[in-house]
Length: 118
Image (cartoon, rainbow, N blue to C red; front, side):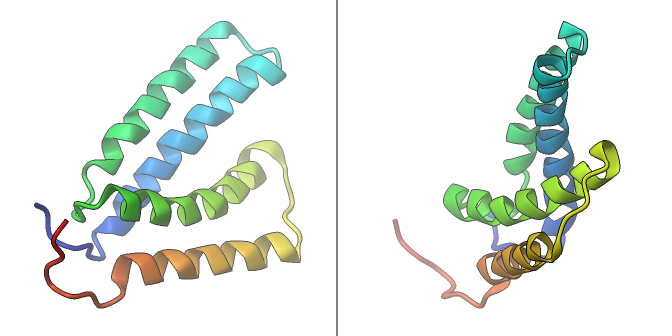
């Protein structure tokens, strides 16, 4: 069993976000924006990479990792839209993202009992 999360989790969350959001964006480009079919193929590969990157997290609890990643996904998706699609989030998007990232911090870094039996 792996140890609980540490601050080394953040780079893995960033890599996972790039793979998942980038992969989904590539599929979107192929289907919704009439890009070549191979964009979707690259997107599927990137989405598979995302699934692998999640396994590298030091916490052994799938549910915790994916729940925390959900908050990173929310903020990362808005950032991706700004960079690649010219999207401009409003204050509610920004506030929502901050709340999500605060939730990630609680889920990943709150003090916990040392051992929990399944």
